[in-house]
Length: 119
Image (cartoon, rainbow, N blue to C red; front, side, top):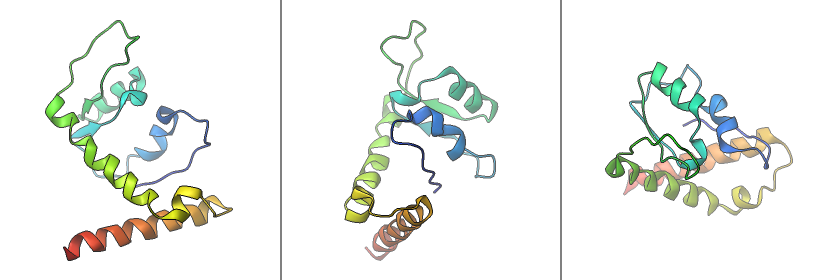
């Protein structure tokens, strides 16, 4: 898992390049919501031979189909974010520096992973 921090008013697709660095294992599918619907993201994923499963924005004239059965799996990612935000320190962001905030996100992620392994 890779995490990066952007400014609160920054759109999701502007942080895409930070998270999808080339040193990660190559995914086969990219599940994302409408906020990642940008031509640059689709082109980047096509170059990496990744199937983008991103619903089109309603304002787009060119329509691209979405595999709804794959898109339903995005629910698992959303539930993971919900569990991360159950840690009050992550939801409220008590930490003053980005480094300590990211470290606590990592600690919370590890805690969730260990809890998942033990069940």
